[in-house]
Length: 240
Image (cartoon, rainbow, N blue to C red; front, side):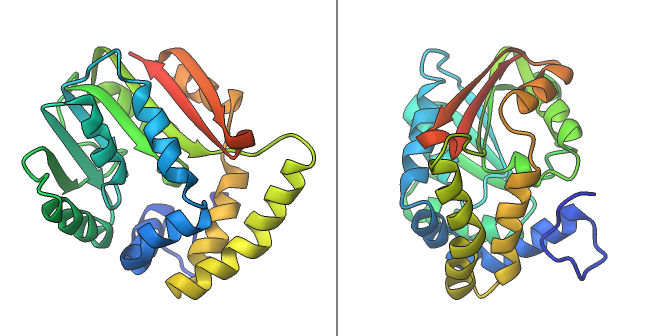
């Protein structure tokens, strides 16, 4: 049974996730930074550095949201970053941000479904995702399509929440995630479901070696996992 944001609705996970992000899009950036105490910014920077040696020229950012990871990817001096997302609300916020920063000649945001990417095979030097693969309706299908659009020799870099394993951080983190984070999320976003879905979706996500196994299954090689901040989050890397 897949974890969904709105348990009283009959829509599939994809439609519900799009709806949820539309609902919270105007406050998403603020919420992200408040709830992670700003550490999410460091996580994204760390992930982008993993591609420094590769110097990718055309980058695809999946589940781009408001474009933060796409903007961070400009540190690699690419020719183009294309961001795709299923939420119109998030894309609208991202487009505003990119226009204000005068980056619209480098970053293009468009509607797109991670499981049915509208790009030809072997197009991108790198495919990046931050906090998006957890929301895929069909994880294997989404990762397989990411693999398809990567050029041979290209890399994927994925940042995703994981579950801390060590005492006492595991217990403290679980308490924060389960009881405090949903309350803060509810106050700021006015959508309680979005922030009860977050800890539930993290619990259901196959992190660490389990996620690396899925990456290998869909064809990625040289897979690696780098835990961040006591294992709250992890960076996953795979090559085509």
